[in-house]
Length: 266
Image 1 (cartoon, rainbow, N blue to C red):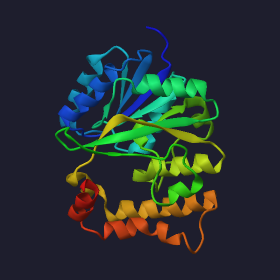
Image 2: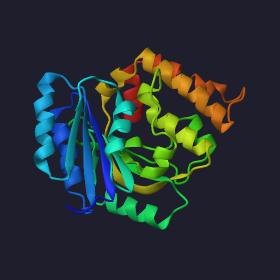
Image 3: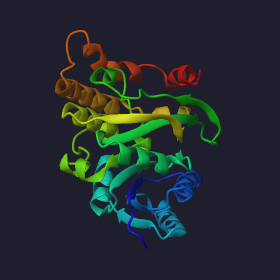
């Protein structure tokens, strides 16, 4: 088998079977063929274990690894990165769908633009059944101030230079960020002078529906608040006028999930 140029990091935990299969199929259908997938089972329950392993046989470029303990996404991504052989790392989630030309377009961009460490894209938004209901655009060249409201990159769309990410220690693990690992990473890299870019195309369909907002527990919102505080300090954008953005996760948590979903869907 030819040496991969892109290593796909796909970490799963108790995935929806149909959505997971669609996600893996979308990678297999990429027009860019020189990839490998590190399929990392992050301690899924026994009822999911065999199914995840079976999916790894769909393509010889898929490499399967399992940890019996659930350690959250950041830990799994770091473990998968240790096994990666590709020049670039491509993120993928177990319930999203990458469009066929995603890898070829992102690979071409990074090959031609050495100034940028990573590249993402805009996304389509779809419901639990896979029906497209909207789209989300991200700034082409995010600035430090762009991080105030939200992360200016869609994590599942990211392709990043492997050796550079290793040099920065990969994703942060520990007491936090848990569910804010991407936000923390991109602020840390930006503060260090690295740059990212968003292709102005929808190269991935992202699953977003009402039940997903139930994951926004007070614990996770508190952790995001700490990530924001530390990140804004690194970026030197924290001041009395911007401190309200630190508190944003707690304010969002206080709003009913149904209302948040309705407003975004609108």
